[in-house]
Image 1: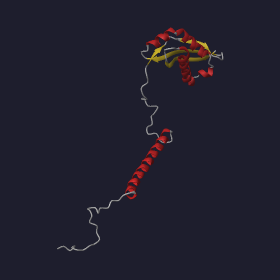
Image 2 (image 1 turned 135 degrees about the vertical axis):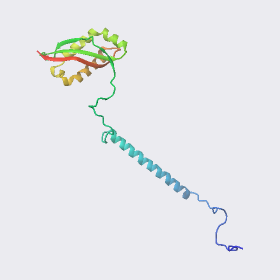
Image 3 (image 1 turned 90 degrees about the horizontal axis):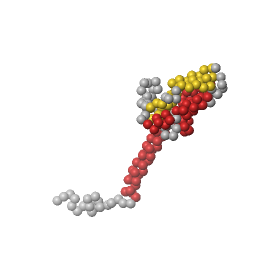
Image 4 (image 1 turned 135 degrees about the horizontal axis):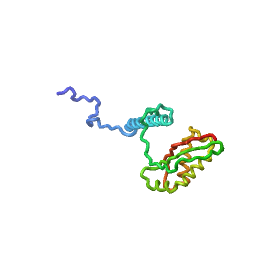
Length: 181
């Protein structure tokens, strides 16, 4: 016979796990706290990543890659067809004491036959436009440091006022000399 015979130690022998089930808020509370903690952690992570990204995009962070503008490779530049029938022209500047001698070439989309046709058909208008454009400029506006501004203005004027189907993509100056009279 066993030592336990007839002894009642107050133990519940109703089931393997004691027959008691935790219910209500006491069983749900640990799981709820776990999900709240995961949510707060995710929120902190998202805010941190957003702040770091914002600082980098606004220039307050250090750039990860720095391109050297003096390096030989900067990327591929598009290739354009050129229209050079305008030829060399000369005119006086707006201040009347300088002469401008220029030869301008227009760059347009490669293999665009409609643009080539339109530019050829308007060669007289283009010559007149460029002569009038340079005649309306003062000497100090035609200095070499303003050359990119001149190209941009000419491109915008040609695309908006003079050409219908052709789009000027680049302006090249073969010659741009300003001489005092």
